[in-house]
Length: 287
Length: 192
Image (cartoon, rainbow over all chains, first blue to last red; front, side):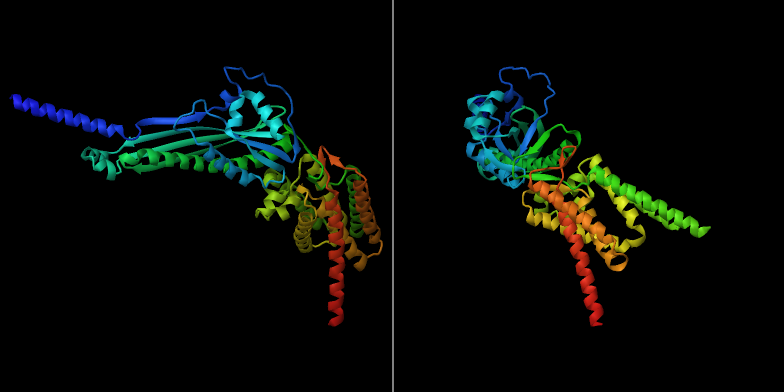
């Protein structure tokens, strides 16, 4: 009986060790990284100012600043600076050909961290000579869960060869475009993505990192497409509601072909006169 | 006569209705250099049929109807459509090629100038040399506009800059198309 108890005790310790060994690999549960536009623009609980009836004035072509909103905490899940620059470069490439955009400047994270709030944005705008600023905030959640096949991790060898972990990464990015002078938001465009990858236990970290990178790439691509649509809508909207005043710097133009009122009145008068004469002559022919 | 007038009225009403409907899609139809170069070539044609705002639309629609009314008995519908297709494309191509700073354009007036000058040339040849007065008037108008623009004057309608270059191109395109057509017809007649 005593030896049986000893055997059970040993088995329990081995099982415990294996379990500890298994949970020693990779990540567990739900982790993520995010940055908040509101927290960045209104730090330390600042209250946004009351709505003002100022009309933003855009002088085309525009110099645009493009940056990620810095996250509050730097963690292992934060996007590396090099990756951020690479993602922003892709967005820049897509929009730098626009006729009403003179230049797009990518603002490094380090510049953004120095001063928060609109004061920080103003400083950067002065430094780069920006007219508008596009700030990209994000929220990414990475979940790694074990599937039924993870049971084979208990064999230890399974931890190396059995893909018993499902790594799911959900990413949301949101670009808000601000007029620097009036500090008003002109438009915003979101982008979402969901990346799923399975992995062995020992590869969880590596695969999760790759999925997080892919998640950002897909979300930024989605955001770029949405931003393009939003820009078209914005152009149509401001022509109608005049919520933004647009003027053109020298050497840049756009407009419509139109006849002015005096000429239109002259043509209309001539048309009426001819119509009247035609009707009279038709009446004479009938009689 | 009465039936023809009714048909004309229906045509005019449909035309104005079409302009109003197209106005809802102005963002995807107007001449936008960037988008055209990116492959949205339909804007070369459709840009002439959308407008910046209601006043712009009203001015051009009234002018179009007045011009149609003036020349109605002398225009056939097929010629109107085919010339419209040709002129709108040609004006846009010239704007695209010769005015690289022109980012966007909309409105019917360039096309109306082209129609007016083209019809005048045809009528001078076929009916009455008095139509030459109309041709001289439209050429004088666009040249005066260009001269004033060169001096720094910029016409505007409710904040929208008037692109007088489109008028000038319209008159040039309309006149030379009509002259070219008449010359080629004459050559064909002589050779037959």
